[in-house]
Amino acid sequence: MYTGSFNTKIVITDNWLVEISKIKNKVLIIDSNIRLHYNEMLTPLLINTRFFEFNASESNKNLNEITKILDFFQTENLNRSSYVICIGGGITTDIGAFTASIYKRGCRLILIPTTLLGMVDASIGGKTAINYNGIKNCIGTFYSAEKVIISSVFLNTLPKSEYQTGMVEVVKMSFLHDSRLAEILNQKWDIINLVKEAINTKLSVCEQDIQDRSTRRLLNLGHTFGHVLESISNFEISHGTAVAIGIRIAAKFSYRNGFISESDYKAVNLRLDRFEFPSRFPAKYCHELEINGIGYLKQDKKAGKKIRLVLFNNGMKLFIHETQKFNDLIASIKEFSDG
Ligand SMILES: NC(=O)c1ccc[n+]([C@@H]2O[C@H](COP(=O)([O-])OP(=O)(O)OC[C@H]3O[C@@H](n4cnc5c(N)ncnc54)[C@H](O)[C@@H]3O)[C@@H](O)[C@H]2O)c1
Image 1 (cartoon, rainbow, N blue to C red):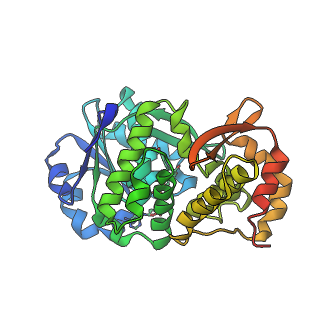
Image 2: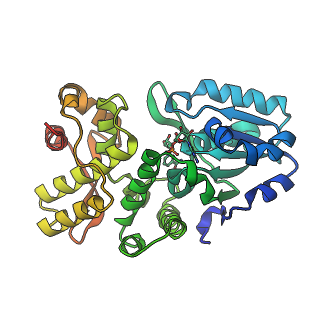
């Protein structure tokens, strides 16, 4: 599999337990839902390995939990050659990788993502993060895992809504112009092939811009509008739903500003419709949108006093657009309410 310049070996296998069991100097950080669902399968590993069970939620992706994980590392006498193995969704791999990156200036790291989003996105590309003072992913590091091990077995227990969130990110990546995902999504695909191609797409984008200063920003398609929807609903609108609607808003904004044709605008929506991604958000959040929407927009990707958006150009190519037309942006979001 493609590893690019990240030096992360990405392995797709259902036989990972044997491989992990052979590693001597290791600890695990494990998502409590994974422990619950896969207790029988994991018992032989957990009997012989010290582990930290993590209750994965955005509110726990914080400094307080970091302190607990650091205490655990210290108690277990971890050193720079110790392996930290994180098993869970994006929240668990983000916090686990962040802690591994700072302890003794960096331990060895293996990620085993268990959500679709984790497999195609969060575990790929070497970014780690935690939330701080209510700001998502405010503190973080660039720290590549030595290995990412993907086992599709985990997807069997993933709730449908979490699966959908992962699919939204896959479809988002299909809009990147050199991705083969759009072609694959048009055929009869299986999940492993889709995951492989999504990883290739993400790696090839990140490789051109490891520090997230140019091309990598295109991966934010749908996210600036999406973050506003998550914020105005106090996170009642899920990330997947918010990003799907966010992509539709970006397409409409692009069409309205003359960047894409009507047929391209329709084509973007058609691709999202095929996966039955939502197109409207509840009108009850419009009041909060009007009051605090601009504030939430400004919290997101900023370029000086402007907001940096990922929009569509003709031929459905993505580009970065900077604007100060905050009221237009809020009006564009409001159009997608069901009221
Ligand atoms: N580092 C990056 O580059 C990057 C990229 C994208 C997203 N992220 C981060 O990823 C996080 C979201 O990750 P996520 O969507 O994987 O959510 P998550 O980690 O919260 O997992 C979703 C839920 O599913 C449960 N779960 C995980 N695997 C399961 C399984 N196999 N079966 C049943 N339940 C399972 C979890 O316990 C959790 O309740 C966000 O915090 C986001 O900021 C990071």
